[in-house]
Structure formats: C-alpha cells, structure tokens
Amino acid sequence: MLRDKNLVPLSRQHQHALALCVRLDRAMQGGEIELDAWQAEIQQLFEGEIGIHFAAEEKELFPAAARFVELKSLVDELVTEHVFLRDCFARAAVRSLGQRDLGDFGQKLAQHIRKEERQLFEGMQKVMSEPELASLGAALDEALKDASQACALPNEATRLRPSR
Image 1 (cartoon, helix red, strand yellow):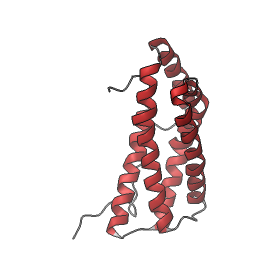
Image 2 (cartoon, rainbow, N blue to C red):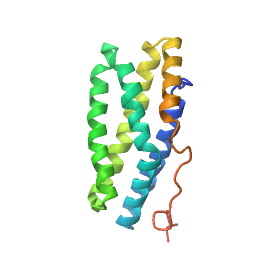
Image 3 (cartoon, one colour):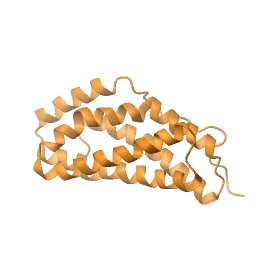
Image 4 (cartoon, rainbow, N blue to C red):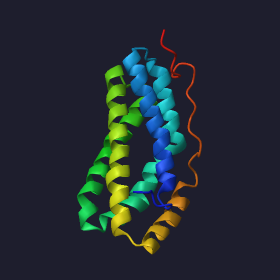
C-alpha cells in the first residue's frame, strides 16, 4: 500500500534509523566494532531526530491509532518497545552497551520500525478517514519541527570498509 502523505515524514525518519541498523549489522558481521564510536553515533541520532520522533509518535500517532480497537494492542506493544529502545539509547549515551547489546539494539530497532510501517501505518490508512489523516499529519508536522531532517553521516570508525 502506498504510504499516505501525512505519514511520510515519519517514514523518512524510519529510513534514517534503518540505515543505521543495516550499517551496524554489517559491521557486526564483519567483526570490526568500535563500541564508543557506534554509541556516539546512536546518541547523536537519538538527540537529533529519534527522541523527537518517539515523542511525536507517543503524543500524536499512538493516541490516534489507539482509538481503533483493531490497533489498540499493537499500539500497546509499540509503546513497550519505545521503553526498551529508550533504555538502549540512554545506555549508548553513557557508553555502557557491549557488542552483543549493540547487535540486539540494531535488531530490535529494525523490527520496531518495520512493525510501525507494515502494521501500524497500513492499519491506520485502512481505518482512518482522509480528514483524520490530514489532521494527524498537521499535528505530526508541528511535533516534528525541531527534528533534524538529515541522516547523520557515519564517522570514520562507523563507516563500512570494503572487504579485503
């Protein structure tokens, strides 16, 4: 299903976070992990975009979706996942994630994003009217206005290196 224009700003931010997850997964598979550098990048992404993104979802998106019985339990799951992911972001900020923690974080974040895209957004587009989606889109625009609109660029330590 084509993404409704009112949900596109969230989907763009999801792409930024998924890019981090893919790069992290590839680095983990390659075995070259610089924990401090990855945690610094995760912290930067949270402070510049994801923290605001989570707040917008929790203030605007989730309450709008939870009004529909068929989406309520999914919203509850997503809120619980936000708690886990926020803890991971906080641990990255104080550089307390180990290599296994980083891998788990990347997998959980990717799964969370895909659940929002494939289940929540698709479900909302089926049950919400155009005026409801437009009203939600305006509220999301306001809630997201302070988020950086650019994907954080990898630094030297987190950039993927060609295989030898």
